[in-house]
Image 1 (cartoon, one colour):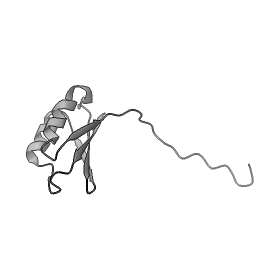
Image 2: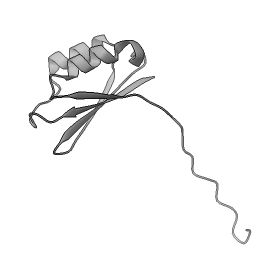
Image 3: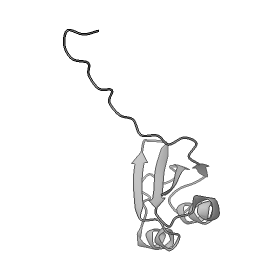
Length: 93
């Protein structure tokens, strides 16, 4: 699954991903969007089975520029599942 994270400066704290931006992202293969925000920055995580981050990063950044100011792109470096270690039986070390 393709994944990219965008960091956008909050020029307008009320800015949001509206229908026009969502349509542009869907056309790129994005099927899931997560938005996280603090007082300075909005983070947008884009995912999709047909979303190709290598080919679509610039187009997605352009679509997201409507949300705020400067757009930074973070690409995945490592992806790993984390599993809880099995507990050892009581009385053993």
